Structure formats: structure tokens, C-alpha cells
Length: 289
Image (cartoon, rainbow, N blue to C red; front, side):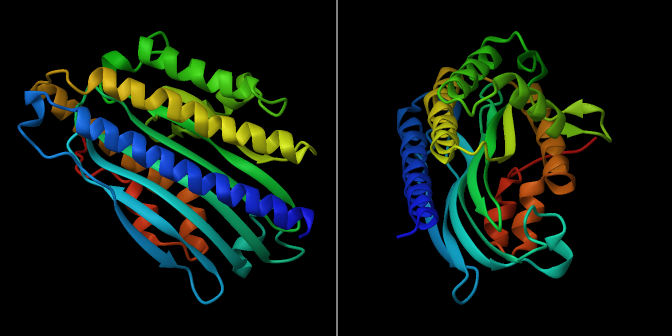
């Protein structure tokens, strides 16, 4: 096995494992929710769908849940390969020389039912063209304005986990990746951030594959160790009709970002990805104003 194939195999195994760990942690929260705020709803469970991009082009495993704590949660694994379309090659490093690519990763989006519990997004991936890199990150998206501050305890806890992940490997640069996240998850037409940030990185290739991979794994582990705790802390709180209305409005802004600016959405759709999986990032219910 070549070094590259061994690296692909290691990344594939990790992303599959991370998907399983995330699914298990969310189903635990579904089981623990016993408050009357959920009106005797049954705990949710993920439903799985295997999909193929095409003959000899890979595919993935979509995991989607509509539960009581998580009104909608998707934790998806994919491994796709083939050729980039001619119009897309100029946008991808290394694809102009050779359109063949391989990409593997896990992508997560959570929309909680309780307006006090933050929504969140996380993804980590490895991409290979004539070049090779890692990308991903995690960001927190509180639904209520009173939670959407840099000094709120939930924001502080989430950023601490992401900073710790960056410190786990020489490849991590918290200050740079935090700034990148703030710039990336920005709605220009609204002149506002999507959430309270986190970290974002792309085209990460320091020349030390092991360090870059270790950092990517630390991001997934950091999210796993922090986000479920934030949900557990908030999921039993009572909410008002006004809280729910504010949540619906904030979800609308979230949908605007994902449809207009998110590169992952564009990449997935333009590489023949699973449309149902890609658009599962959209909230189950939302309003606009």
C-alpha cells in the first residue's frame, strides 16, 4: 500500500468512527430528556441511508434524526471520487492539471428544538487532487440574542474546546482559524455573523501529514466533548412563544447563509453529491422578516 493509500485509509476509518461517536452522543441526550417541555415526545433515533454517487464514484452514509431534543440533526459520512466538471476545476487547487479527485469526511448539522440550546455545525474532511489537504471546523449558532455574545458562558466554553483542539497539534492555529471562521460565516447582505464563531480552516497542508491529521481528529474530538454538554445544560429549560419566534427568525438567517454562501453546499452539489444529505443542513422550520 502506498503512503497516500494508507493515509486515505486512516482518514476514512477516523471519519467513520467519528460519525458513530456523534450519533451515539446525540441519542443519549434524546434518552435523557424527561422534562415536560417535550410534552411526552418519544426519544428520537437516527435513520440511515446508504447512497452512491455513481458507478465506481463512491458514496456515503446519511444519518438523519427528527427527535425531541434535536428537532433535526444530520451526521453524514461520505467518500467520493471521480473527475471534477470542466467549469469547477479552476476553483479547486490542483484540479486544473488533473481533474481526478478523492474526498472523504464527516459533516454535521444540529437544529435543537429548545430555543435555549444552541444549534451547531461541524465538518472535517480530507481532499486529494494533484495536491492534498484537510479542511473543516466547528461553529456555534445560538438562536436567542441574549446567548449570542462572545462573553456568554456557552460561547466561552465552545471556544475553549476549539482552542484546546488547536493546541493538540503544531498544525493548529487558534487565532488564525478563529478569525477565518468569523470571516467565513458572515452574511454580507445582512451585515451580521451567522453565529458566535468557532474555528474554520481549509487547504491545510503543512508538509507534516501526521500533524495535520492529528489536528483534524482533535477538532472532531473537541466538538464531541463540548457541544453535547452545552445542549444537555439547556435542553430542559422552559421556553416562551417569543423565544420560539426568535428561534424561527434566526433559523431563517441560517438558511440564507447555507444557500447563498456555504462552499460545502456548492462543492457537494457540483460534485454529484447526495442532494438530500447536502440540503439536510437547512432547518426544519423557519421564518423570515
